[in-house]
Amino acid sequence: MKKQLSRQMAFTTVSAAVLAFTACNKSPYPGYEMAENGVYAKFYTQDANGVKPKEGDVVKLSLIYKNSKDSVLFDSKNNNPTRTNFIEFPLTKSTFKGSFEDALSMMAVGDSASFKISADSVYLKTFRAKDLPPYIEKGSMLTFETKLEKVTAKEAVEKERKEEIEKQRAMAELRKNEEPKVLAKYLEDNKIKAKPTASGLYYIEKTKGKGPKPGKGSMVRVNYTGRLLDGSIFDTSDEAAAKQAGVFDARRPYEPIGFPLGEGQVVPGWDEGIALMNAGTKALLIIPSAIAYGEHGAGPIPPYSPLTFEVELVSFTPAK
Image: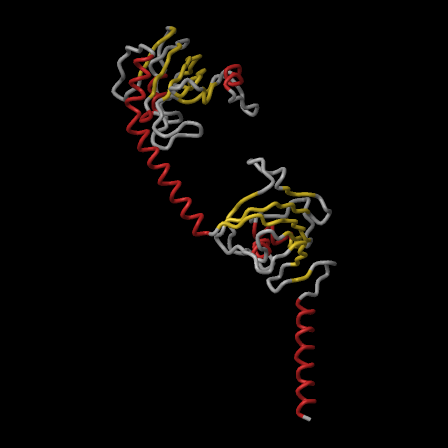
């Protein structure tokens, strides 16, 4: 009697577990199972004992996601400025139950899978859009196809970031100490005898213009070519020079730049130098970093970089 009762209890327990598992994994999407975190998942490859990412870890993955019409909205092969097949980003806190963050937390390195995730929640909660875009049907699901290539622990990322910051600080300090020597050598090599102004600007006039000089607030129009002291061009208003230097950008116009003089819209060395020019004047400005881009640099300009600018004051309109 006891054995029969024991068998009956065991059968009941197993049956309940099977029913609970079936209910948990009941899915309206063939081939997909719903996990406890609300994600509908279909794994192609899965390592049950592999390394899974946690919040703050950096994940590297290939990713394609599509709308309910099967139109590709994103493909890491095509939408990647690094021109690799992958994207990398830190895994953030889940923005809703059944999110892509939840999906990634289920994966181990090397896993590949497909996930069905609420389009409304992705756009309105994760992307924080005000409204759904026209190509997203309300109440529909997005399909995410992904493979997890690598997980870098949060602690390792933070350590690497701190090391990189220290490296940049050391390099900046070295450049700061070397700048006076580098500038002095440039002046000597180019036989420049001009004396600097109080700010450190060297102004060498090449072609004399006519008429008055622009005052503060004048709207000036200037042609220019900017170089590092090694002669490499980092910016110019001359299209031919830009193409020759490999810095051409088809999205911008190549024409004189306009700005109000003396109002801080350009580096201090420019405001000072252009104010010394008549319309039609061409000059060379040698600008130390203190009145250029300073300790931070800008884009291709490293920290503590003295610069040269060939400038032409094309015209100006006096301030009213």
